[in-house]
Amino acid sequence: MFSKGRLIGLGVGLFALICLVTTYDYSRGRVPQTDSPLIADVLAGTTARECGRDATEIVARHLPAGIAQAQAEKILDAAVIVPPRPWFWTPAKESATTWTGDTLEALRTIKTTAFGSNLLRIHLTFADGKLRRLAAEVVCRFG
Image 1 (cartoon, rainbow, N blue to C red):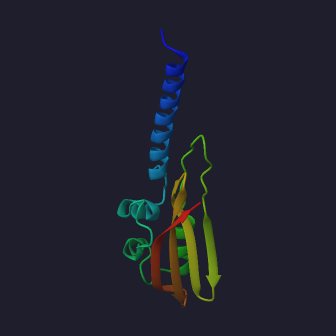
Image 2: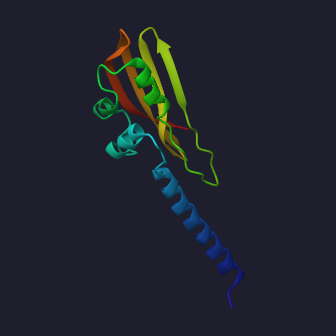
Image 3: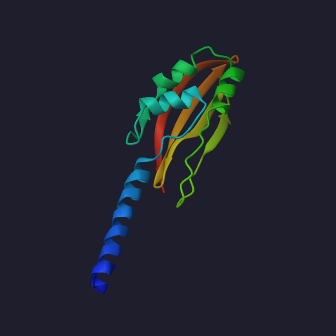
């Protein structure tokens, strides 16, 4: 039938093929599920390989200049994803908001892979309770 060496070789080859397919699949990342139109538009307008990409135009559609501070905070609070549920790694989901004077910096995970994640970093500057300046970019973290 088959020799012991051929069976071992076949097993190693099959294992290598499975590892290759799994690594490729999870290095691209899964498209996360989200109810946030902001996150959905950013995901549609960017790709996984675009680190440091300016996303100000996309975010400005959802957070236009002059929007009330409370309304902007509500939109940012709703900007979350439901990460994939892979079997061999635990997705890191980051959601942080920091105030410095009148400036708000929000960091939200928009995509996660086995090798890192893509984050949306948003800087908002308010004056008199209204949004005056906006900057946004997609940042990649590997680890």
